[in-house]
Each structure stands twice: as structure tokens, then as C-alpha cells.
Amino acid sequence: MSLVVMKFGGTSVEDPAAIGRTAAIVKGRITQGKSPVVVVSAMAKVTDQLLRAAEAASLGDRTGALAISSRLRSRHRDTAAELVKKTEDSAAIIDLIDQEFDSLDEILRGVAAILELTPRISDLIVSFGERISSRIVAAAFREKGMDAAHVDAREVIITDSEFQKAAPLDEVIEKRAPEKLIPLVRQHKVPVMGGFIASNETGITTTLGRGGSDYTGALVGGALSAEAIEIWTDVDGIMTTDPRICPDALRVKIISFEEAAELAYFGAKVLHPATILPAVRKNIPVLVLNSLNAKCEGTRIISLAPHCKSPFKCIAVKKKLSIIDVVASRMLMSHGYLSQIFAIFDKHKCVVDMVSTSEVSVSLTVDSNASLPEIAADLSKLADVKYEPKKALICLVGEDIRGQNGMAAQVFNAVRHINVRMISQGASEINMSFMIEEDDADEAVRSLHAAFFQNPDPSVFDVEARKQLLASSS
Image 1 (spheres, rainbow, N blue to C red):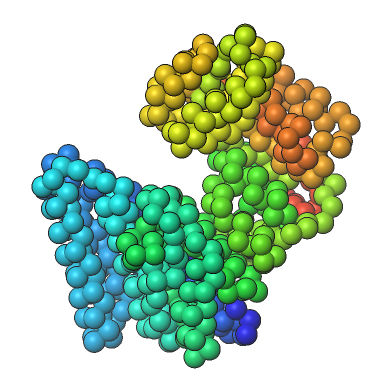
Image 2: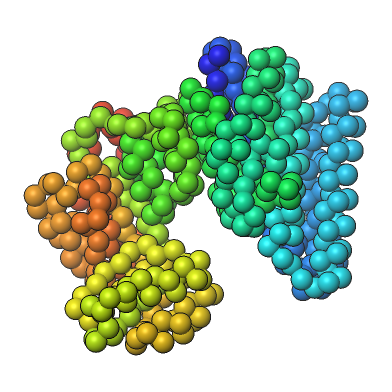
């Protein structure tokens, strides 16, 4: 059984045309002798709109919340009606959509009545995006001649009760996924399930956090020991940097798990940071592919990538960060001082990206968020504290950066016209990072890309595509 898990993002299921392309891609895999298990996101922008409806309801704006729900209902009904033409099947999917939105409206009315939106209820509200999109996609597949079977992801992906960003219970998923999915695959059916959504062990709906559909795909792929995990999105794969910043960015053909994980964590939006982990554990290749350009080979992520002649594979950018400076001249070297600092970040569930220490101070970088004043207040009990928002982290990823003489000099020469606030290089052999002002981030990326990707290794980068781009623009 050549089993492949195929995850399709919001833009791959955003309208009837996109779902039609997705169906053709899955049918193509079946033609190749593959047994696909399909994971889909909510239709594009639906999760954001559900969150807006929830927020409106919590503020007492019942009319506004229900108006958002009504527009979403119409969008999903129209999409289903265009995709499913058989009278009986069309009536069934439209009725199911109406039942789901009736349930959603009841929840929104309840939130508007009590004027409170808990994380648990928020998860329940946003879950409707994937619950409905997966139903529509399954029906569309059947219309296209595939024997698709809808599977409620909440019966497969089991998590703890940390609502809005739940942690999967791997051992339970390792048991549930084969039980729920393998019998369907053996009957030559195509299981279709929503990503992002899950439930705790008592059956209450949870979510894996934004971008969690990728994570669902990887968890299912790992539990089923799939041949490959395919992440279908709207770009040709992992690029050397954001093409919106550098139009001559190159597609990376092949990259290691370790490099891809660094990129995902430090701002590359193609992958959810946790996506790689279940694949790494089972050594399952991950392919990042473009549903708008299915013929493109995309990016292949494997355990050990071939040697690259170019010093770097990619440049990632993470914006909207803050630097927190903690200064205590008499406390820094005292036993337990750093643990007290990090205990405060743990208390506020705030992730630290980078740390730098000097004789009298500790500097840390974190996502800018509403908790910063509270974090600073707690830290001020230990030392003098100040924080600076609107910072950006530039991360260069490549193999054995630490072992290449003069690499740091080349990097900082390329950005010599930009003020660098913090530097981190020794912690990783494959990552060199530094902090700058957010307003300087795009210029820094352009300068670095021009310096390091003029003569890229054609065995690792899609050089031909850039040649064609340059030829068409000249």
C-alpha cells in the first residue's frame, strides 16, 4: 500500500475552481497507484471571519456576529451547489451546511448573551471552518468519481486541553489514526478530514493553533507511516527568501529536515514550525507543492540533504518582535538568577527566540504581544528592565555555517549600512541570526540575497526558473 498524506491549504480549497484543481491532483495520485489520505484547511479567510464573529458576539454585537455567519453560510452553500450537481447529493450537502451554521449561530447567540468568549468556546467556533470545508471537499471528490469518505478529525487527533494551541497526544493518535483510516484505505476509499481541529480525551473540541492543518497532516502521516507527506499550498515550494521582497528568489529543490525546521520557526510561512517533527521521527519525506502549478516539483524535505556549494539555503525574516533588556549589575552571576528570569517568561507562556548575555545584562527577543507590560513588571522585581518593540530577526540557514572561515565577515559586510542590535551564531551549526529595526528588514534581505545567491548551486536551487523569469522581464 503506497500511502501518501496530502494536506491542502485554504487557497487550495477557497472556491469551486480551487477545489476542482485539488480533486484533479488527488485523482492524479490515485492514477499513479497511490492511496491518498486528504487533510484540508478551512476555505481561505474563513478562520479569520469566524474569529471576527466570535469577537463581535463577545462584545454584545449579536447582529454583526450573525451577519458574518450568514455571509459564510452563503459562500459555503454557493460553493457546494456549484461543485455537486447530482440532485440528491447536492440537497444532502446543502442540508448539512445549514445544520452546521444553525449550530454556529446558536453558539454565537449564547456568547452575545453572556458577553464572554472563553478559549474553549473560541476553539469550538473556529472549528466550523474545517468541519464544513472537509464535508464539501469529500462531496466534490465523489462528484468527480472518487470514493471519498469524510472522517471527523476530532476522532483521530487527540490533544491535551490547552485550548487554542493544544498539544497532540502522540500515543493516542498513533492508535486512533490507523483504526479510523486504514480500513477505509483498504476499501480503496479516499479519507477526507479537516486539519487544525482536534479534541481532548473527553471529546471537547480543541485546535492546534494557527497553521495547525500542516501539523495535522504530519501527525496523520507519522501515525500511518506514510510513504510521503505532501503540503499543497499556493507557492512553488520553499524559496530562498520571500519573493515579494526579492523577485529573483529561487525555489529550493531539496533541503534537510533540520534546515526546514529552522526556517519554519524563524518566519518562513510555507510551513508550520511543528510540521517537521512527526516526519523526522519516522523519517518520512515532506514535499511542499503548489496546487496552482501542480507540475512543479516543489521542495523535497528529507533527513539528510546533499551537499550544497552555496553557503546558505535560505534567508527567513521574523517581524513584530521586541527586545527586552534586563540589567542587574550585582545579580547576573548569582546562582539561579537566569532561571528566575526564564520562570517569568514561562509564567506568561511567552517564547524566547534569542538570548544574549553580557557582564551585567541579559537581552532577550520575544514576539510583541499584549503581555509585554506584565512581563516587564515581573522582571522589574529582579532588575532594571526596558523593552524595544518593532524589531525584526534575520535568519540565514545553511549547512555547517560555523565551520566556514570568514562567513560572519561576509554576512555583516553585506549589511554594513544597517545597524545590527543583537547577534546569535554559536548556538547552531546551520543558523546565523541577528536583530535589526523592523523598517530595515526588507533592505537587509535584499542585500544579503544579492550577496549570496548570485551563483547558486543548480543541484539544490531551480536556477532555470530564474533565468526564464529574467528573460521574460528583459
